[in-house]
Length: 226
Image (tube, rainbow, N blue to C red; front, top):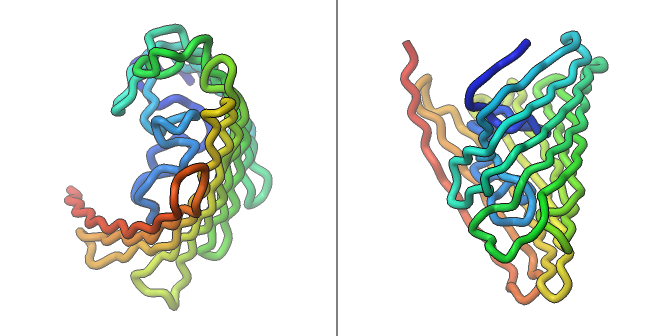
């Protein structure tokens, strides 16, 4: 298959259904624009080719960045590749991206380059996921990080879906290095066929010169279907 136009960068768990309306209200640190890694809002304009079978396929994208984010990558020629395989209840993938840094980081030199692995497992209303990346956002630095999360919805839970996530990010840049961590617990609550509530409690332990902090995120989603 081939698609031409504007699409999400096919790296890791990149589909909207992988990160939107799942019960988590914030993107993982490794996919949060400005954290020296990637962004869920990376968008590409170009061509993408997919070849393989439903259980094993590869995707290659040749494109230029057109992001929807507070930060925007410098204009250049992006190369992105992904391989995904399904074995029983497990889906595993490996990805690679070669792009340019955010243009707002005017001091950054060189290219952005990351490799990543991801996995998903689901059975009986329980889904486990994980995604880890390693590479550099620009010359003279390196980033390693990832997250693991679980989503649980069993019949006895009624309208509630429980979510848990643990994250880490190691940014090596000399005296500017940073090592944030974050833990999330929450729930998605189906209030009606049209209204869904999301509640997250997030805790970030003390790191670098930053004190520990805890936040409460609440959102309501109203959907109209025809």
